Length: 68
Figure 1 (cartoon, helix red, strand yellow):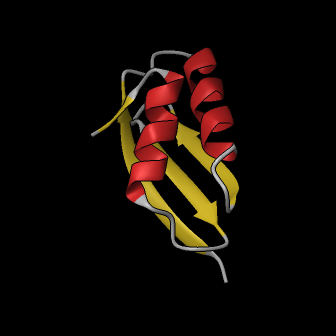
Figure 2: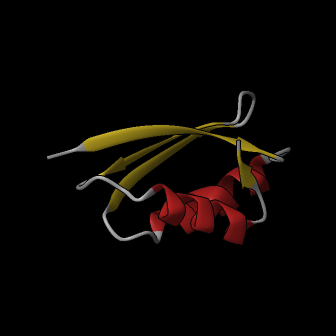
């Protein structure tokens, strides 16, 4: 089973921001892929199970950004 969720992350301004968000989300249990579009702030997370929004928010916050 593959689950895809999309979030809007605010505060990203460069490639380093994208890398930070991608790395932190990649460490969330169950995450199998992360796609970040810097221009729009859209972050698509693919996982092998339904993710708890709080886990995603915590990972993005750890990277230094916010989920809108």
